[in-house]
Image (cartoon, rainbow, N blue to C red; front, side, top):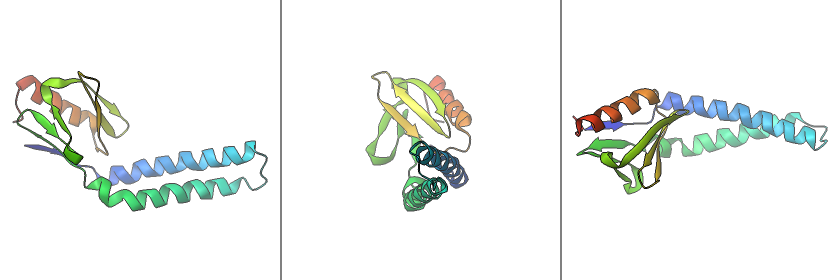
Length: 130
């Protein structure tokens, strides 16, 4: 069995990046609206992303994907058979799985998404999960 677990450091880094984007967007929106207190957009963006990140951290870091018996078993009962995987790609710190039927799944907050893709591809090529 191979386990794909979220990485705490990657989770925090992703949220720092998201906070920077939210801060800039908040300030831009207030500037475009003519608000004289543009700096409050930065505080609002930082507060929103920080609160969300803190609140969801335990839940998100508890989502694991296991590769066993020719399938990826994910959180909330997700099941993806390896022979049904049409495409794998990195989206930031996540690995997106696209099945032949068009279903999409994310293995989130991977420290090295390319390594996770390589492990899944190797298992698909072997037809096993060893």
